[in-house]
Structures are given as C-alpha cells and as structure tokens.
Amino acid sequence: MADWLDLFAHYLLLSLMSIGGAISTTSEMHRYLVDTHHWLTPEQFNASIAIAQAAPGPNVLFVALMGWNVGLNAGSMFAAFAGVLVTMTGIMLPSTTITYLAAQWGYRNRDLRAVRAFKQGMAPIVIGLLVATGWILGAASQSADSNWRLWLLGVISGLIVWRTRIHLLWLLGIGALLGWLQLI
Image 1 (cartoon, rainbow, N blue to C red):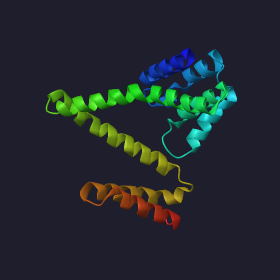
Image 2: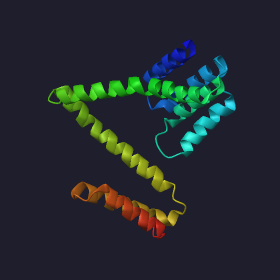
Image 3: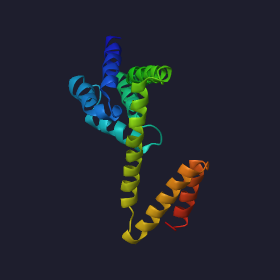
Image 4: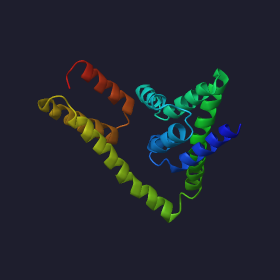
C-alpha cells in the first residue's frame, strides 16, 4: 500500500510540474519508475509512450499505460487496473482542479480590468499559434508547386470562419474531400 501511495503522491507532484502537458515530465517519470524503483523496464517505459502516441486520443494515455505496466509487474490484473487509477488520478487531479478553479475565478471576475487585459492579450497569441501551425503544416507539403493551393485554401477558410456563420467542421470536411480527390 505504501508503494501505491508513493506512486500517487509522485504523480500528483508531476501534474503540478507538467507545464505543456504530462509528456513534458517523462524524464522524471523514467527516473522514478525505471531507475529508482525498477517498476518498469526501459522497454516497457518506451513502449508505453510509443503505443499511447500512436493511438487516437489524448497523449496523456501514456500515463495510464505506465500505470497498467506497473500493476502487471506487481503481479495481477487487479493491480494493473489499480495502477491505471493511481497514475491517471494523480496526473489529472491537480491540473484539472487548478484549471477549473482558475476558469471559475476568471468568469466571476470577468469585469476586472486585469482579467479583460489578460484575455485580450491572449487572443493574438492564440491566433499566432494557429497561424504558425498552419505554416508548419503547409510547409510540410510534398511538392513545392502545390503549396499555393494550400495557402489559398487556408486564407479562404480563415476568411470564411471569420466573416460567416459556417461551422468549422464543414470546412474541415471540404478540405478532407479536396485532399482525398488530390486537388490539394
């Protein structure tokens, strides 16, 4: 029981350190699970990350796989489920709670000048990150002569989202269809 509590407490702390997501704390997880406690082999650790990253869904799933493998190595299927519960609750509880409380506070204080300034300051950052993502994805095109189509599609889609009430999912569907037809 002490090992499970220790694992839970460690993942609680990792959650508070995981700026950028749980994946940013993998080196500490490796040190703790593989080097210090020998609860996982290096191969199990790497496989947990690889399988979770290849699977659809949130990338935090690798934490569940690590908990699963710790439990299996402890000797039973029940322990494997306990490992998933301990690691996922530990990594999700603090960050989720802080996010929830911060969102509630921000909503209650939405009329404060500092809160409004923060939200207005974040808008260009979000737009810049989206443009940067589009730039990177557009630059990854297989041939240079087709880039102009991607850029044109991106600009037109941006204008449509900005100026109309057409839902973004329709544009994503049209983009997928154009890609499937190899028009872009």
